Image 1 (tube, rainbow, N blue to C red):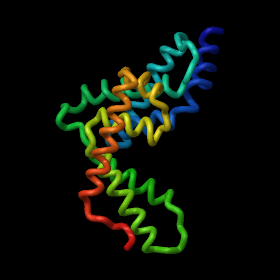
Image 2 (tube, rainbow, N blue to C red; image 1 turned 120 degrees about the vertical axis):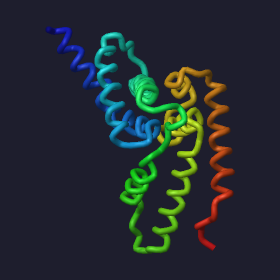
Image 3 (cartoon, rainbow, N blue to C red; image 1 turned 60 degrees about the vertical axis):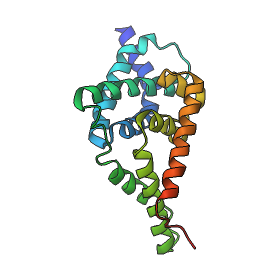
Image 4 (cartoon, rainbow, N blue to C red; image 1 turned 90 degrees about the vertical axis):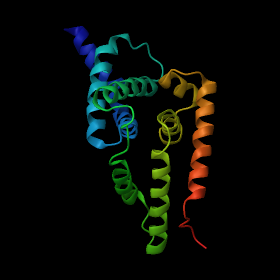
Length: 183
């Protein structure tokens, strides 16, 4: 009984503080909120089962690795490889960004910022999964190269290459889209 209580306390200390990050990663990988919730629930169960073997270190990277694996398992079961898309991601991200934008009283500036955010989200959504995953883990989740390598189980050089290629594709994509920027 004491071991079960220790596991529960450890789970609360190690996993719970990082659930929002796990959800954000799952949402980027699955493309919608309800699927992300399913993935995070599965990842939480996996983390709880494995909490006794957690050896310390970066708890966030540990949970994101579990979440990533749960997401890919879920995607393999529920979607064909060609259908793994972003069905409602743009809608979710637009609504979240709209809530986060500062309201400075300038409607034109707010519209431009929203349009630019939508273009960026659409461009990120079009990236191949390995590139999108590396970009989200680095630029959204703030992990360093070593942590991304641990989460994705690829060498640091591969992480660096994927990030460079993802950013290059984003720049090219954003450059080919009509600009909503200021004149």
